[in-house]
Length: 94
Image (cartoon, rainbow, N blue to C red; front, side, top):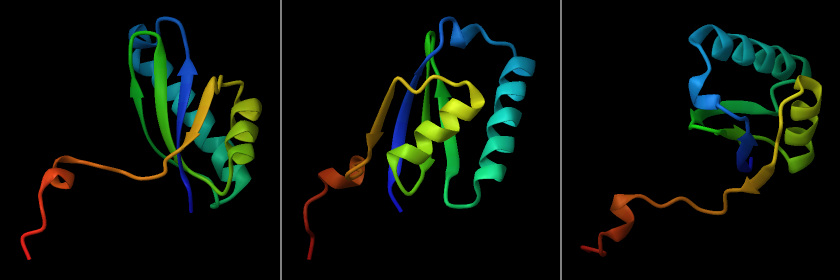
């Protein structure tokens, strides 16, 4: 199933209190439960003015529907085409 990165522009996101982040997370999980197991929230990264979320979903429309139902912005939705990490730099030793 495709993996997506969602960019959510939220002014002062990095200043949100733990209770506010918990409330946002609970709302998101509730909507995901209603939508079914085909869409999954993996994790999110909070920065000063944005939250970057990693989701597994069948398509972009599922991500948009989740955002609309939750009242969350989804300013950018990009499908991950491949992943790299430090081991990508290693040459074939075989």
